[in-house]
Image (tube, rainbow, N blue to C red):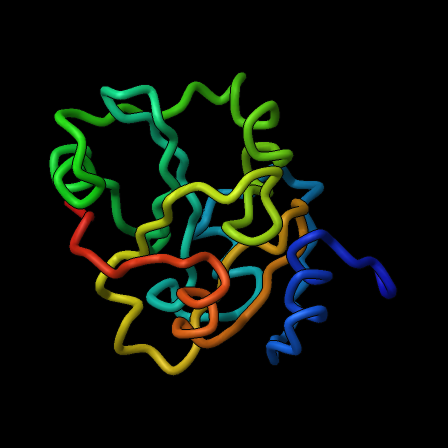
Length: 158
């Protein structure tokens, strides 16, 4: 596992953004956010999942919410300026982002999509997101994630 660099880590390195990598064993198949938080011994309140949704205009959007929270599609649509929002089918995730479910990072996607980080992250010193590969997470400052992804903060959770 040592020496592995994901696209997300390479992006952080190239922009000289400080981050910390957490690794966990994914062989048990428990790769949901809450299980990952337990495995890396972190409060689920600082661990975030990356969700990709499609608006009524067919444009894609990236939403970053705490692992214990659920994305509110109505709030997400409003924050994105769309009439409605629906989750991108898992089968389409890799084609659009370059990442697979459970290893989708908001950093280093094939294309930069409009990104919205839930408001809960704004007050945190550090937050943890996927590093772009199952078994890897990166911890960084929310303002750094916002800067790298050109994200906005908005209330998008249920």
